[in-house]
Length: 140
Image 1 (cartoon, rainbow, N blue to C red):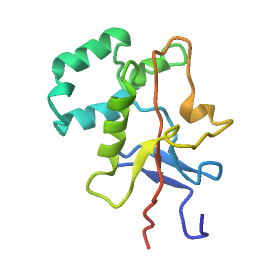
Image 2: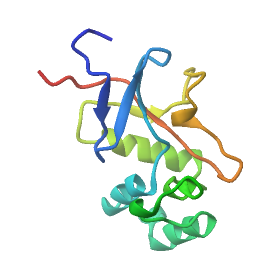
Image 3: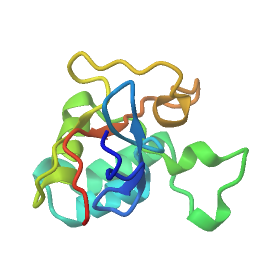
Image 4: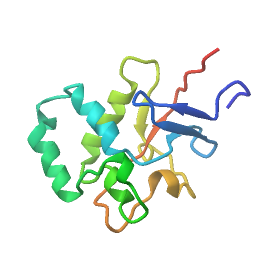
């Protein structure tokens, strides 16, 4: 990372991404949230991501309003129960209309140790994904 590259940037949903020397990329600071997924859904990504599909996800892990998140329910803010294919479609959407490429953190050979803040797996979560941005844009 050059001295001019910021250490924190934001994805198209305005969620923070931090630079990881281990991954040589920006990584989502949090697992993908339901708010981010809702931005994706509002963009009409395809028939597979309809209201019925989202409602089935919420049966696994209900949505919580951001102002109600606490230490005992924070996991409700994150997306759970999506397939790797669906997660890859979300990651591709993050980079659409920009020069950035978003992939899943564990896609390819990238493995990042000690980054539980962005790619943790909790026993009560079905699955969660983190995205990395491998071609960061730098504002001059």
